[in-house]
Length: 566
Image (cartoon, rainbow, N blue to C red; front, side):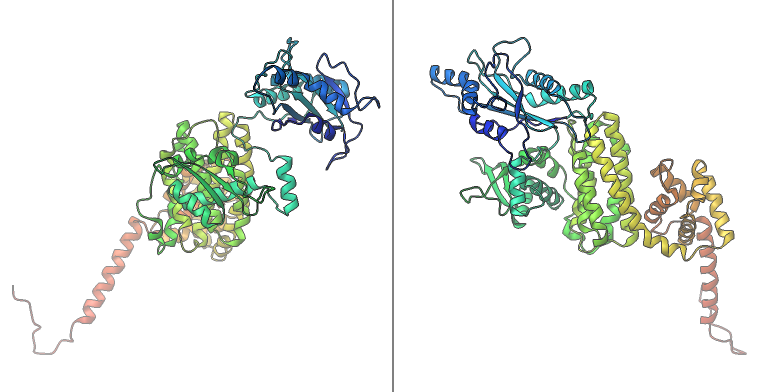
């Protein structure tokens, strides 16, 4: 059940006309009052043809008019409006049940506190099977204004109890970190202009996409302006940035002026102070543009930055910072990934935005390595090779799993749901990114004797998951990768043990694939291997001896070779 308190209004008669009218988008059927304040005492315009909406509006507004006549300061904004809707799969409630629900909601909101005969005047109008509208005038019978601060939270709590009592679909309790739902006016405007998103949703996506490109708030606003977004900065007398608002191109009011939305109204974590805390806590050791000649470095560094993700979640403030930075790295990866992977990664980034924020305050300095890796990626001139990208996406997937578990452990239901949605898209991207590598590896499988040796290494390094790994369809590709790593001087047993320590395999859908992506990252450089090094030295000594012999001039009979004087 959703109860959405609307912005306060000033026209009681106008709202009644809508509630009793035919409706603008949804048909209104049989509008009538199902509940109201105790002293309503007048007929329902939906049931009595002699009753008028004007009479009802005047009756509801009487305390407002009385206050305005007695006090110097008039109350103009006084209409409280709250639609209450059940889920599509919920049963049809009776008028009596809706009356009880309306009473509980106005009591929770503070419109009509329980046992208070001097509360505000209100009515609940039903004009559809699945919802009612509660209308109240926010002046009490004693002339005072009601206490409505945090009424949305109290109403939400009441709805959760109502769902339990009436057997309705159970929604999760809010935590005040979600974005504001679009208003009907915003949705209708987007529909009228042919936009797929409302202005605030569109601005949120563009601001999040810009964050990895900036190292401070001034750079962020400049980047947004260069991207065509209207920015209105608020500055102090010293010129310091105090706040900002953003406007979508083409979003104009009735006077043809640009509509601006403050950062905090776009999303709770996009206020200027929160952006400054995220952007200005740590700088890269070198400017990102200086790394353009080393395009693969940024991708491997990002994977390495995620290697300590699990250990950095021991402290709550550090954990929240790392999860926030993880969202920025995911956004950066989606921007620079190949076109065939971009859709899944962008969907993952958009879903993960809700998982980036919670009530826990982040210690942003703790996550500078991941944040700097995101900045490096967006400043990289070219994309990664296939193995580097597959390794990074696999690391992002594992970090997302850890973030989801952390949110679940903390009871962050909305954030855990968001992380799970992101994981669905990340898994699809990881499978797609690894497919070309698997095809190549499977074409050059090692011989049977070598595969038996590598199978022994698997059983020694990962005994608990060995059977799953060796029966995984990707085991031949893993064996080929182990052969490549051994040729570069690595010890397969050590690589497997290190990879299993970085990512537990018990919950992996295909453990051999997980190991492949890890080994591609850790075995990309040669590593000292005693046996391989000894063989190389023997080969080098043999070749050097042959070259030295070939370099000596042929012996001439009767002529002694020159000897270096001692």
